[in-house]
Length: 150
View: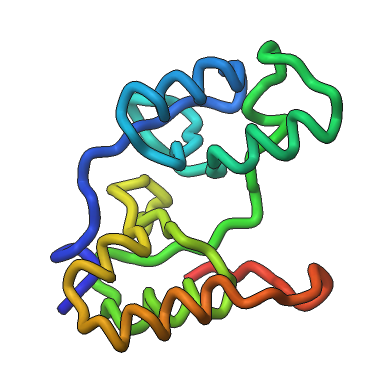
């Protein structure tokens, strides 16, 4: 099975100049925990990702307000996959980088969708899902975590 067979194709996006309040509103209204950050919502070239955790933890840590820009909090070092990659390769990236969601991009960097831990769990055995969640959630010192592109 390939990533394109499993990924969520409904993409919610914002731009780096949007406020974190805008991003949080998109998350709330669409019941998602991450928003793709793109150069332009019509072109959708991926430049980052912002999560509910980024907003909650990073914004509070800097004493920020809802007027902070997405660019101030988004993750720019991204782990991505291509639509033709295997689910197993995608899952290995999630485990290695300890991320719960991976944007799916084409060769031009256009965001096509997202694969989440939940997407993988729904297609897998309970035992394998347990292993994946444990590997993604394992605590590692920050200095050992690195991001990798496809």
